[in-house]
Image 1: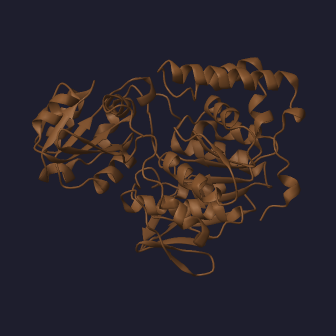
Image 2: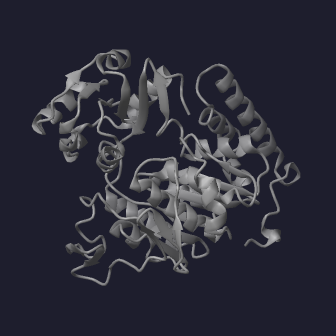
Image 3: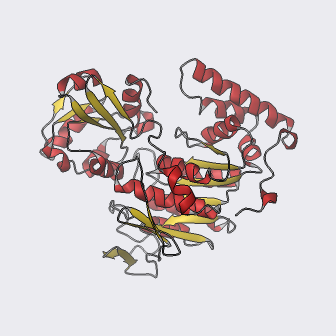
Length: 420
């Protein structure tokens, strides 16, 4: 548990005047954005606040016990679960809508006010910068895979950035995925590391060792480099069946409203992070069960006799997981290539769409024709629809699975009245 002296709390009296002004303006701007229907204000508030005081995030984080959650996939869900678990101890500030850059962190902390704890999702590119600004107690590293090929760094370059930054902060407790060689290498210089194992379905970005360049071999859940000592560490937290084994060897049943085995892995990560704050699994698990939807992800909406479930998939690894979560029911796929998505759609050819052959498939979105070509290659029959309303009219009453990348997901979410 924490020493009470480390949770002095953020008080107005301890903040410079410019930080107080910036905080007030940030909160006002975010509130005006929400009132005007221009979004949840989670970016604009922080952007304005940081323009007034470039050190505002540091001032707002001071006095809080902070956990950062980063990786290519699963950040938003794991952050939400972690915030729920740490909430056993008291109020938690968090960027629950996925605004995961410093503007979003600043807005979230300013909006929430004086809380002893903060759990923040962090875009993997910004993790080193946010570590410097917030001085976290814990950093959780989930996974690394290719994402937004037109602007993102190569996976090994990202791992190197993490490795360098964490090596310079030996005081940080790191909770890291033992099944991802890139994450293990990134965390290898950290003296305080707790390992969790949730499995790794997507292997295409970790066939080569980032340390030596030699091939990585795998067998029965284990992995090792054929040319250097890098190998899978022994995890303290392990997903087994429908539950999680903790470092004492006790098995805990994990009951979630969220679908898929991947979310049991996200829950294991949340439990491991919460344990660094002194929260026991038996205290955290009931809170995890209350999480039903995260910024629209996994939300189920009834409309015109159809039960619509929303699944976000933004890169090859997350599409693989989405196919596992989706029921064998009519499925709408929607692809855009706007700036938040990345402009390059060549990643579609890294996704195996063959699991969809056994169900009616509809496609839509700005880049539906790119998706159509890819589905033809995989011999998946489909129907192109011009709108979400047309998709609803095209399927019988019952379940409709919707899998979409970021801006396409937001478009559909807005059509369903911005479900949470």
